[in-house]
Image (tube, rainbow, N blue to C red; front, top):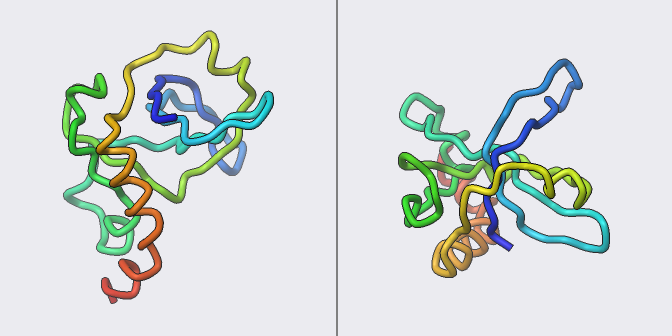
Length: 115
């Protein structure tokens, strides 16, 4: 868990594909759960969107080039085979994984606080 890859991700509406940084959060058999939107774009986002972005604390150690955020509402399942050939970037630190889990657990409370 916590491995970061750079790979093509299909838009939710199926209209196209974009290369994105993704983080593996779980796996079961031949399926892997990923959060498919790691971004450095944060400042101009709305309060509601910022509330769903986890700020990676140790982003350099994770192999990222700048401060980045994980959109916790961007979960998808992909096959294990789809990750095998993709570019491995790095891994979230144990501390970031723990903070990410806590961030996800408290998400509804954060949303209510932004309105």
